[in-house]
View 1 (cartoon, rainbow, N blue to C red):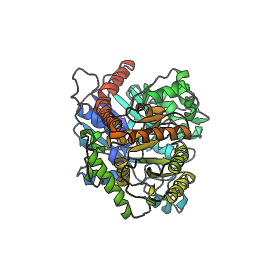
View 2 (view 1 turned 90 degrees about the vertical axis):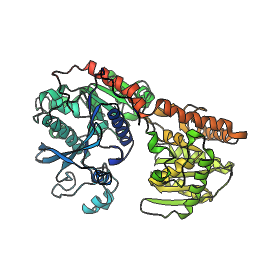
View 3 (view 1 turned 90 degrees about the horizontal axis):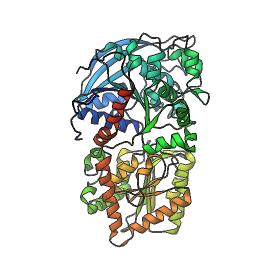
View 4 (view 1 turned 135 degrees about the vertical axis):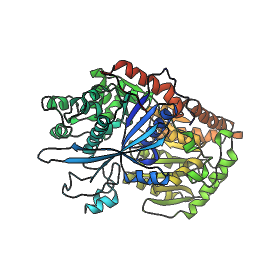
Length: 562
């Protein structure tokens, strides 16, 4: 990544990020890509960049693989009381230099405990958001596997409190604290209303809260208002009113609290921010955007970037592709060969606990291949996709479908049946495998994204980098896929998606494929021009950061040391 060096006249010198995900070290969703890309871009631009992250087991695997060592920073005790239950969490913090000007601070609690299920048991926690099989069996409850942690709210509070105590220990202050999603949203709330002995200047630190997904189920809320008061360690004189003022649909909502107590809020695309501020689609968030507006909280949007090197199909070995190719060099023969070999290798696919294959694909010259990778749910629109693709498969014997994903058992069953019905034309892999995901992206001609709402969308960019044109539902961040220029878009249900796939097939079958090649080339170039992380940082985030500093004048001068 070749970001421009930071201009000495700029105001941003040091940023502290707080998140539960960070690139290849710890990831479960799109947050990992944003934090990794944005932190690396800011470090490359000369900004001292700090990331505070829980010390997951997977982090150790990354550090060992890359021969990185940890350096102890500090240790302290965090009070996590609630009700009659007294909990002192002993925290150890170690740092690691990931790259020049990019430092990771890892928070380790010893031991992690499951408060809600069995407080007396001391069981190591290995997952990020959900119980692993190992944990479920240790708790003698196999049904817990894959469910969200019952004490997730407490985990998030612990992360925020630990970040505050780290700042109490070090001699420097960041120019700005960047809080990612509901997991870190309580930083300004606890800094200002908490009574656990934080330095008073921390209450004045400028903050930015990024909403990666504001949909219901992603707010990290709790319906236990007394519980929130106690575990956040709030000043008793204001605790009840502070929590009551941050309730949404009857629950204490960290995203609302972060907006009210923080300096600024943004989300991950301009159009998603507009939808939340101005349209009925905000109902999917519990009307968070409209509540912000009523309180005078400004909500801006910045479309996420992408690291081209990570997903470029020329890196065949790293991605697990049978051969590499370069869409930016018009290497369509290479893409055709990769598609051919990837489909051929499906014959050797071995079912496992994490992935199971249904159906099969046979090679057919000139057959457009539709693809998808994702969570099979109604929110992601896969019920709509099934209705549209089933109709198309009945009518056109010269198309194929290769999909990968898991989710709602009812929708999964429909795609299993589809694969069994159209042998040789449909392959569906239930589960997830990074290698097969990359092969789906690289092999496809068209990539289907029928989401009912989508804050930004990363898979459309990944597909475009592989010469796989997206077909998107024109909502949220997916509007960046301009129709007939960088892919295809539609608005509506199964009929609209069906007709759009027919349009895509017509372009694919046009003589010489001139329009198809032009769209593939333009889509790749659009990402290079506007959506690399260094461009997004320089053109969008730095101006936003600087505006935040103008808005929030610090109460005291901050030290800026390396």
